[in-house]
Amino acid sequence: MTLAGDLFRTLRPYQWVKNGFVLMGLVFSHSWNNPQLVQQVVAAFAAFCLISSTVYVFNDLIDRERDRAHPEKRKRPIAAGRLSTGFAVTIGGVVGSTGLLLGLWAGYGVVIVLLAYLVMNVAYSVRLKHIVILDVFIISTGFMLRILAGTMGVGIPPSNWLLFCGLMITLFLGFAKRRAEMGVIANGQQGNHRAVLEDYTLILLDTFIAVSAMGVILSYSLFTMSPETIEIHGTRNLIYTVPFIVYGLFRYVFLFHTAGSGGDPARDLFRDPHLLVSVLGWTLVTLWMLI
Image (cartoon, rainbow, N blue to C red):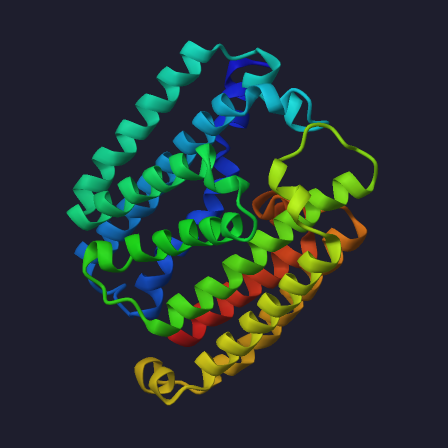
């Protein structure tokens, strides 16, 4: 493995797709005709990409001993010893500082959100990831902060519908991640897994997933039919994007029940053509209707 390859695996740029939540406010507020706002939101997106990579670096540093006992995570460059602790700290510091400077250019509100995201992740790594249910809500909060960076951070009032739908989909993804991790244990690959999994059961997680998936479908469907939405976007046709959401959710549930996926939404998105088509289809059709 080359140094560039190890840096790629440590910084995880493929995970930057998650930061697409930063762009949601720009799209659903019809602010794309404002060049200044577009530049600020794009800068906020880039800043979040760098900050999230910094979080991955320092999480790998904190968890390196535990990762060495995990069947997959032991292959991570820091856990495997291919990247030294000092070098990883330097890389994380440089990337994080660049992200904060970029966020400062985007707006003071963006920097505040980025700092809140960093503080929350430190608390998560040290303590909160060991508290059942709260651990998933912290993951969800990270996505909500992305939405706020692209709305309040640059002066765009966040839509209540956007926040509600965002909360539901991120809770679904968080519980799906825990379900996939439990699936690894159920298949006999014990390793040294996160302690909070001892407080979960497969039945409990399947219940949480079913509830949050229904929350996604109902909240998004109500959003598309809301008189406020129809007035703002000038179309009643957003209802026709609901099948993309439903199919994508059902496909994701299918994947972590039958293919051992679900632990990494970004990686699963690029590996499964059905999931990719669902997301791209929803994105293209939505943009076509709004623009």
